[in-house]
Length: 533
Ligand code: 16G
Ligand code: ZN
Image 1 (cartoon, rainbow, N blue to C red):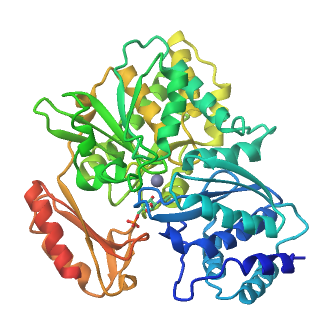
Image 2 (image 1 turned 90 degrees about the horizontal axis):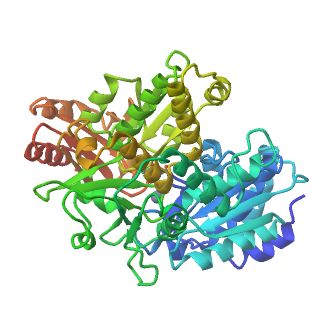
């Protein structure tokens, strides 16, 4: 049975702020860090119950607010294969987090255990980590209180990137099985990925150094660790690796800054030379944006769409060269935010599917392909190789040395790529592999297709919940009549496209617009925003 007294006693130390309502959204619970104490305690207990429900499999808990400002924090749960928490549990977590007293919480827990048929005699195993936010240690202490109260077997992964935490969950749960994913330590993660990288760039000399903007976050540690292992092949030059100055995290730097401002972080101006490529991570190192300065020193962005195009084309070529094009097909998953230029380029070559925003939607859709490449324009993404594909790769008998080389490259890619979730460091090394193989600089990569000018605006509205969408968020069904007005506007712009959706992470509505020229994209975005407001 539930250790009611222990939960009760500990719970009283973590009262819920009376006026707040919490929601487990696209990114877990996320809000101001100093309001999350009660949520963390409860998440400790929920994670343990999730583990019990899944027969003692290890569940992950990551304490982070990613690209958000430093005072924010958040928490999300990771399911046994390293994927996002199953959707139905998001609702349970929300309900439990909003119970207002410890008595109410304990009652709701007992009811939940009954209705979800959780066998309390099963073990509970949880691994948890946090990013570098100053609010992290206190929040982790509250989480530990919850884990301890319910008697979970808990392992502290310390300060770590979100993708490493996902890796640890999968590695722990597959240890000693035929699906073993790697050593279940962060060293295991670094070794696995860097070994694959080194095999893939063996014989490629003179890869130019890469400037990496670490967003003044935990990615700085990961860059340091990888540097120790790969610096003979690729020199990583960290900038914005300041983990001590208060307020520095994600401030005027990082992947989200680059994507939303569409310009160079000011701190990189003195560092970046004409033609040199660089990239930005976000605050928990699961997003990646590349860019370079062209010969007129204009900033050129290579976002998630460009990464998808680069990587997909490379994998398609390897599959063909390995003689496997009849057995393995490659597909792409995007969201409505994918640039129209990329969608056009990709859909002329591969199957492309559009899904709603949020990693879980992309990830699930990508699982339906033999090799599923998914990237959000904001730089979050990865590549999934299906179980069947791995089997084909293991059994395939190449008939020429060229086929054998290509096959080896694909197998090494399956090791290089973090298949549990988007991973800025793994993706960075993947991009570098492709650039080295193709002898591309930023310029050649960029010229795969031309981005349509676009503009994103956020609109503060009285109630964003009245905005309901369909067709992977590309069309509004509510408020009635609004979509028709948007269509009417869009028709007046060459290559015009626009859509409106409620944010899943902020109390705003987002408007995206594209058109043939920048001024028109801006104008369309603001006129659609005017309709929404
Ligand atoms: C979250 C999502 C990200 C998505 C973003 C959209 C995960 C792990 N992260 O950060 O994929 O792009 O939300 O935010 O799913 P929005 O709903 O505020 O536009
Ligand atoms: Zn992130």
